[in-house]
Length: 146
Image 1 (tube, helix red, strand yellow):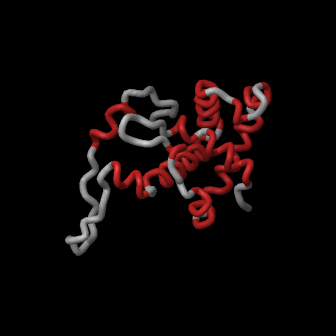
Image 2: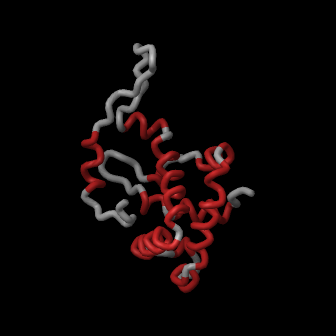
């Protein structure tokens, strides 16, 4: 089982809603998340992603508007909220995949100053700078709080 091109395009159409850009950081849509390779190497993502993308395709707003790729940001947020409510376990995997791709990107590593401590023998990561999350944390979440 694999994610086909149509499913991948639908998934990618939601990236900017999930991780939008701000002054310093690119959106998830603006960079290569390497999703194809992540999906090949981690089969656990395939079934949940197919479930979420299938829901996105069948959701009435998608069909009325001429397809998922024609949806507005507000409609995409509504669909994500419904998907999270109806498929909570799959939704967690969906979000995990996107964040894994985003924070594995070398461009994002540079932006957040996330480098390996080459001098240390354990290769510890340098501390994460929470200030880069300041703008995005002001945005209302569309996911449920655990």
